[in-house]
Image (cartoon, rainbow, N blue to C red; front, side):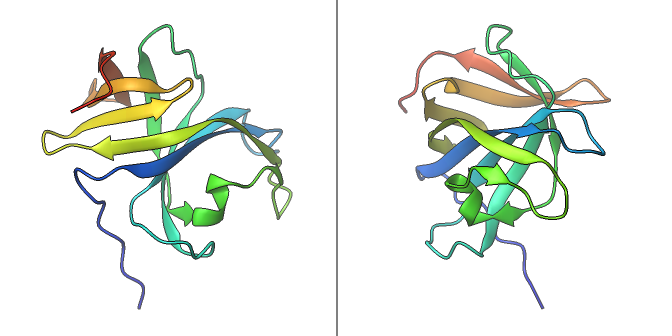
Length: 135
């Protein structure tokens, strides 16, 4: 029986933003992979995957759709996906933290600052609330 890992709070973990190209059943989009447990086994299902259609960081709000857990290897992988699912290329990477107050702090080149999770009744968003990246 597989158990779902519980995300670590107040610890810096790794994240990656991948551009997912040419998937036959979906339009091009971005996948944000958030490491939720520490480890080095590339086959561990230990990345939360958030899908977003656009990565327009000038809007300071990103529409996201939570997906299934993905393997840790996607922190480093770029290239063709198995099963005719297109290809991925890395757009950004860095570290992030989930705080006790459910904020996400990102320290990447593009995804940088403090974000809060919100929704409008139909979609989920992460919205930038501060440029600050320190606790």
